[in-house]
Image (cartoon, rainbow, N blue to C red; front, side):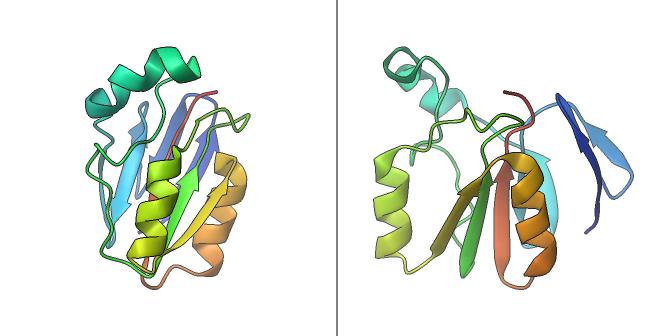
Length: 116
């Protein structure tokens, strides 16, 4: 799996351009289904990442790209669940998250927000 490009609103992985948030789970890429987290939008002013979503926990390290400007909120319940599962949680603006993913790709999954 190779991330070939990222700019506000899009990411290219293995030659496929995605215009939505993506989840990388053991090398497989899929669209992030954030609908379960929408009920928290008013509280954060943005749809956050919550444990209600299908988070790819089968890893030792989970990288969360928080968007071009780092605006994606990561709820405390996600942080607690990562700790409970003994998964290292790395959160950073998406460009830096991609760099972190490239440096340590083994046993690392990711959720990458492509806007804000």
